[in-house]
Structures are given as structure tokens and as C-alpha cells.
Figure 1 (cartoon, one colour):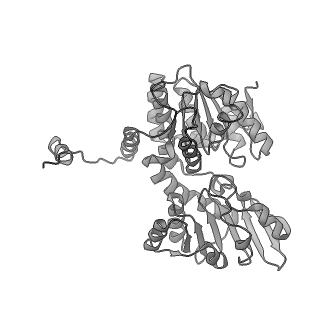
Figure 2: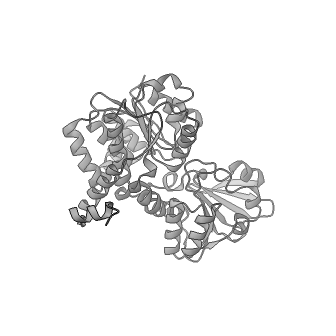
Figure 3: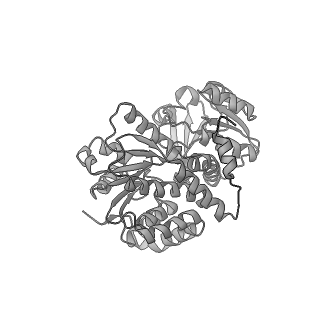
Length: 416
């Protein structure tokens, strides 16, 4: 088995500069790395990561290795892998199997190469490694003591396995940790999605009708930032409670059929498939822009969009133009993949500092509790969440109050 499969090792110096830059803005992960270097909690352990392979992920991999682990890494999306970062990791001796714009076959082969390292802990983003360990590589599942899942889509896949009692090893739902979704999903997605869209299109957002499909934490962040940029925000939802919340947050709520004719920019953030489809494309304005912020490229129905087009061309980098028979053009960004990573650098380093700190401490929790955890989906323990929050506050120079002994008694005692 090769030690690495990357585009070009000579790109490593540029990748190292990127990793060093984000490291300087990740104080929580730096504190955890110092602990790991001292305690070596992963000594002799094989850890596999499938996460969007860019600088912040690379630093997480280095932190895990600092704890004594043998680390193998691949990307969780073919367009989000940055070849210089992959080369930088490979040059340090980490097993890296990934390159930018991998074909479907290459992407699958890279995942399988990571599993060839026989991992005992998996850190997943979207659930592709876990899926393979429950299908094609089911024979390896017994070697896995547990793992962590980074994103909403992956947690949903795990919840389905858990409901059917088919999980073959314990998994922690990192996405559900407060220090992950309240900040990563909301502030990280809100900022990085618009950064990706604006750098890709070079168009103004102010004055446009922005349609946000889905009002979960990612949708909330996207809508909030769109409003701040001067857009008129329309929200589409299937959950009536979230729809009311969007109304009371000051947004216009309507069905996707109504929104299709009104929107200038559409952003899907649901984790579901076919959110935008033929009926919507037929109603859209000339010049409508489509972007996806969900994990998989199924939220915008690309086959139906292509079938409607009489002509398609690359309008600019990461922008594909689909011209309809009536002369209208609809523009798809980044092939319908995660626009913030496929056409940008992803979430800010300060945000991923918290998310990846949760990942690192959850991996240690898996190791420390090996043999006692059942084959089921667990939430991240509250003490891990609170520890990350306190480390982050400390790095910001913020002090908070603590309950006195009498106050703690009062809060827990019904007789008072």
C-alpha cells in the first residue's frame, strides 16, 4: 500500500504556509495539542479521518498525531481537497490519499486506501467511511472501537443506522455538540457561504432577493449574513416551527414554488435531495444563481437542470451557465457541491478551532472508554462541550462567573 496518493509533493511548502497560518488562530486546539503531546492518549492507535481536506483539517490531523496516533487522511468532498495542503501533510509522514477534483472512482479508491490502514478510530464528515465499514469493508468493523461524525448529514445517516440497531461500533454525534452547531453551523456557514459566493461571482448581494432553502442552524447563519449584506431574504421550510421562527426573525416565508419566481440567488441548506428541481428551474428569472451549502451535491437536481438546458458552458471559474429554450440562463456554482469549500476556503479558523477541539476530545473519549460503550450513537458529553467553551473564552480574555455552593444547592433542591 502506498504511503500517500497526492497530486504533487512539490506543492508542500505552499500548503505548510496555509497550515501555519490557521494554527496561529486556533488557540483551543493548540492547548489540546500540548496536552496530547504530554499525555500521548493515542499511543499506538490507528486513526482515520475523512473531512474536507484543507488547512484547518490538516492541523487537526497533526494534533491527533501529536497524541501518538498513526493517522491516515482523505477528503470528504472531491472539490474541497486542496492539493498543496494534502502534499504538506504527506511530506510530514501522515498517510494522505486525496486530490482535488477526484473522479467518483478515484474518490472511492482514496476512501478505501484510508481503510486499508485498518483504523481503530474513525473521524468522519458525511458518513462515507462509516458507510463503507457497514457495507464493502464490513469485515473491518470489529477492529473499530468507535468514531465521531462532524456534520448534520452524517449524523442523520447514523441516526438511521441506530434506529435499525445496525451500528457496528459506537459513534459520537459531534455535530450535535453545542460548541459545534451553535457556532460552526451558524456563524461559520453564514460567513463562508457568502465568502464563496461573492468571490466566485464578483456580484453585489445588496438589493437582491436571496432564497434560503432550510432554516436549521446553517440556514439561520446564511439568512443572517444575507440580511447584513443588504439582501431581501426569503426562507423556504417544511418544518412549521422553523417557518414561524423565520417569520419572527423578520424574513419572508413562502413555498419553494412561490420563491422560485422571486429569487435572484438560491442557497440550499437542508441535507435533503431534489430541493430545487425541474418545476423550480422553469419558473426562475433570467440570471438566477444556484448554490448549495449541504454536504452532498443532491440538493439541486443537476440532471434535471441539464436536461432543460439547450446549451451549457463555463461562464467563469466555478460558474456553469445553463441556457434554456426560452433564452433564460441559470447559473450553477461549484457543480452544486458545498459552495463554501468547493469555491472557497471553508469556515474561518477561529470557528473550526472549536469544532475540531470537540473532534479531538471526542476521539480521546472514545479511546478512554473503549470496551464500555455500546454499539450505538452517543451525544458528546457535556463536560467536553463546557471544556471547549471555557478554553475559547480564556483565549479571548473573557472571564465569567461561577455559582457559589449555596447557589448550586438552590438550583438543584426542590424544597427551596
